[in-house]
Length: 534
Image 1 (cartoon, helix red, strand yellow):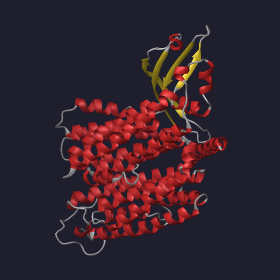
Image 2 (spheres, rainbow, N blue to C red; image 1 turned 135 degrees about the horizontal axis):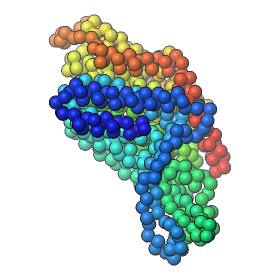
Image 3 (cartoon, rainbow, N blue to C red; image 1 turned 90 degrees about the horizontal axis):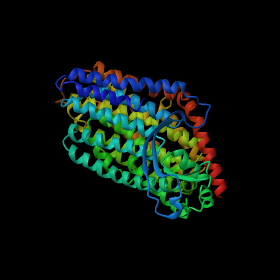
Image 4 (cartoon, helix red, strand yellow; image 1 turned 60 degrees about the horizontal axis):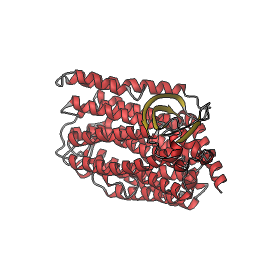
């Protein structure tokens, strides 16, 4: 229901005349409020004491008959591919579903800055929201791929039509990089479906039936319970389930590259810089706040949990990549003169913390990684909301063209300061909790890497304070127009996002209670599998 609700809003928008701007905006905003309320209800009703998936929803979807080319296959009662519409949430996906709903609503409110083609804009906006919900809830590999691709098309148009001067180049770069990542992911998924997606059943008449599916539960069970033995018992030589250790390592590497482009990992990050500077602020709120998190989510769900032995073997590499992201992003953020680029490089740096939490391969580190996904989603969305408000008033976000904004827009400047403090990890705000958990988890396994990565905290304080103070303090720059402080439609999302940032910083159990049991189960599963493999 949550995933498909935005589609209902699209149907209503299609019936409205394009010149009815106020009605179009109202319908779009109200539509985003529905999944926000539903995801909040889901969050409250979620049983944090249970492991595994909850609120399962499954419907038959696609069945593709396969040719029975050999004599052994001709004896089959059925032989086909099967893909189902299957959704569910656990402690990993549920916080990201709620984050998507929250940031989606706040971005819809921030879309007041859009000046043209409102109807088309909000149709693409709601279609993008559907794709994001589906990514975090899909339990079938093909369904996940469909939802993942569903986010690319709306983003391409939202950047290319409503972005800034170099918007078309940014949109093309976004599509090329993410399309390449999707192609790699699709190949890996096809290999998994055609091997680990194998299911064999025998009827009462002792006639076998075989099919392949993208069901995540089936694939996981086959990977770790040796489904090959069942196939061999039936002498199905043409359909033997087999993934060698080398093939598993290759699939993990493909997952790392595919989702690393989305994260983004260095050196696959250049496309993201163009998007952050050229897309409209409301869309960058979603891109930085949600879409980057899809990369980390996919890496954990399909890379780490399907190939834990290979992932543990790559732990040092993941940690080094995380350190590179942290330090590279922080150093380049420090020298930027464009505030949007400071935030873009800051996102690269903060996504490095997610990699460090994953590389720890313990409950504390992985909790920190997921906490960082949620925390950064809130902080970056708030930052780009403020960027939109400043650009709307001054038509620039260049540091040397701005200054003294605290005198003319004190409310916006104050919110910006607190958001900056959260970004650099000030205690009492969400950024501190995520960073503390990540470093605590990693220190248990890689103390030297942790010490090097901690330099990013110092650099973050430098570049964040430099950017915020350059904008808000000092004498008011000559030539700036008289400015009105935050309007109601700007103040509401600012206060809402800030409230969640403070709430997570003061009372982190809001998130950790829902998260701990699931992440602890992941940790136990990884340890048991790697111990068996050893």
